[in-house]
Length: 82
Image (cartoon, rainbow, N blue to C red):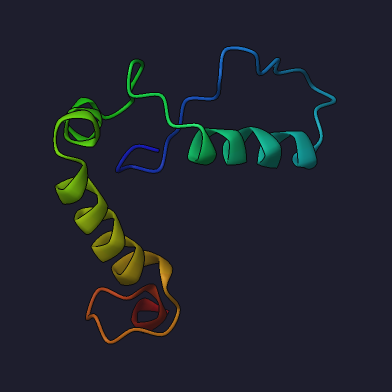
């Protein structure tokens, strides 16, 4: 998922007008679970994932706490922007 919120769905994802929201959610879930650093949307992040996993995981935890936790004290928290 890119910093602007866009994402690349897997090649096997076959978009058509009658696709269900469930199919979209499953495809997004696959992206999050089965990381593919060989075909990245964000090259720098993929390089860090491959070359420096500890730093990658530390940043991932920080960003998760900052942007994906409803109850945190960070000034950028989405709850504070509501």
